[in-house]
Length: 148
Ligand SMILES: [Zn+2]
Ligand SMILES: [Zn+2]
Image 1 (cartoon, protein in one colour):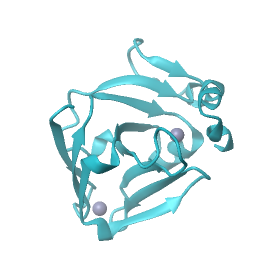
Image 2 (cartoon, helix red, strand yellow; image 1 turned 90 degrees about the vertical axis):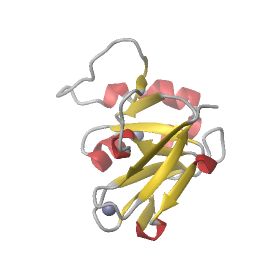
Image 3 (cartoon, helix red, strand yellow; image 1 turned 30 degrees about the vertical axis):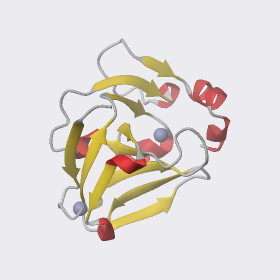
Image 4 (tube, protein in one colour; image 1 turned 180 degrees about the horizontal axis):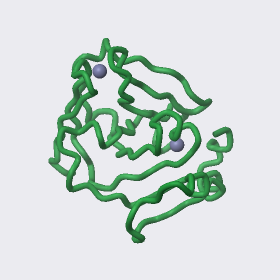
């Protein structure tokens, strides 16, 4: 287990957290919901539920955005603070935290991109050495995603 503990928070500081990372790998999701939620793509790192201590949780608003996941944001400034799988399964209850919330987002490795076939042709992330999955690849791996 890594001892990489990172502090972070929303734009206004009403929501703060300390997250103990279990690794440095993170991914990008290009699905339509992540695109609309972030304005681009969600660059999120998975953090187990018990590894995050929230401060200012009263300022966190949440919305069930699909049958299997929810999204949360700061009521005061609107920063998205996490995406969370609510359906049972291997990722249940883990937080997907946007890496941009970390006070220091350096030193992490983007190792996967999903819903790549939904990425606009207007931009691409640099680098080739990562696992890339289409929507169909994702649904084949996790059938519950068929609703997204
Ligand atoms: Zn805020
Ligand atoms: Zn997504």
